[in-house]
Amino acid sequence: MNQGEADAARRLLASMGHEVVSGPVDDGPEPTDAVLIFTCDVISSTERRMWKRMREVESEGKRLFVAGCLAVVDGERVLSEFPDACILDTMGIPAVESAVQGHFSACTEDRPGLISAPMKRLDHVVNISTGCLGSCTYCITRHARGALISNRPERVMSMVQSGVDMGRKEVLLTCQDTAAYGADLGLEGVDLGSLLRDITSNTLGTHMVRVGMMNPSSLLKHESSILDGFKGGDIFKFFHIPVQSGSDHILKAMGRGHDAGTYMGLIDRVRGAYPWAVLSTDIIVGFPGESEEDHRRNIELVRELRPEILNLTRFSTRPGTPAASMEGQVHGNVSKERSRELTRAHREVLASVLNKRLGLHRGCLVSEAGKREGTMMARDRNYLPIVIPSDDVALGETVDIITDRAGPTYLIGKVA
Image 1 (cartoon, rainbow, N blue to C red):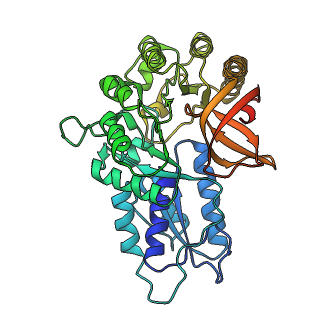
Image 2 (cartoon, rainbow, N blue to C red; image 1 turned 45 degrees about the vertical axis):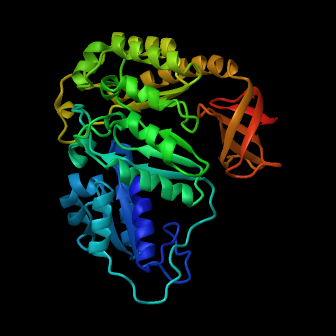
Image 3 (cartoon, helix red, strand yellow; image 1 turned 30 degrees about the horizontal axis):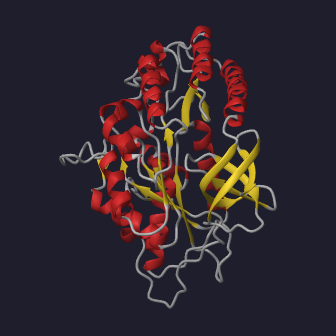
């Protein structure tokens, strides 16, 4: 979400005549005057990086503009530490546009406009909404972004088409909970499923669409429509559906709105509709009150679920959230060891899962440069990552790939 909002600010600033450099260093023809940071405070380690970067900007003598969640939930502290900083409300694309136009005047000098680093990816972030309908007891983002505010379908379609027109090959629909999209609009038949069908039917150009995180409780409400929306050939069969715990009493304490059995039933139906879909899920380790038995249930769930992607986060106390004052806070060393055990369990599962995916993969999108020299990263139609030699392939190209071995989290192959 931050990347999408930052990209919107970048394009608007360039259209106003400002010179936008690609990073915090002075890599333009003139020294940078200001740095605009879109902050995140979802967990404590992320928040610490935000404060570190703000201090670096101040020490560099640049004008500091602070946007994102920290600007909302801890703006007083920002101004206390950085009295000359400017706070921007950027909760949602309309707010981004208003804030940028309100704080940055149009430049009358002859400026070259947007300057960007060489394109290493071909993705385009489209923020379909901001806020959510949930009440998770650990989440501070809900405090920052508030209730769900969805962009109208025609606005989303316009943002998607603009990205495709720029040559972007992967469109990422993102927000806090994509499955909740449209619930606030009061429009008959408008939900994530209808939005995907509109994109598939009406967007001109070659591209693939990836859908961001869907909360189980929201997906259950619109399950039939959303699963139908994924049928389009230009939709990656990729489902990011976080469970957060395999223990029902921990899920209840989290305020998640689902239990483990309901979640597993949902995943069974998703895989019934799309047997080779890539599943990504999240687990919070060491939530207050989590026992060894709860931890064992997490491990059992991972082994039964067999997700291609597992995002593990050790519980992080967020000030002002109900979970911050709950009894039974788990010691950090315990959380760390439990996280290691879950990582080992997932690695065992993943090795088996990846080996079953070896073979021919048709219509893979070459999406980014590989981490190792001489390689590229491609994604098959299920969004499974495949590393291939960079010879004879170009960024944005669609190719068929034969995979013959697996890496730790990806497949390895060559163009067919």
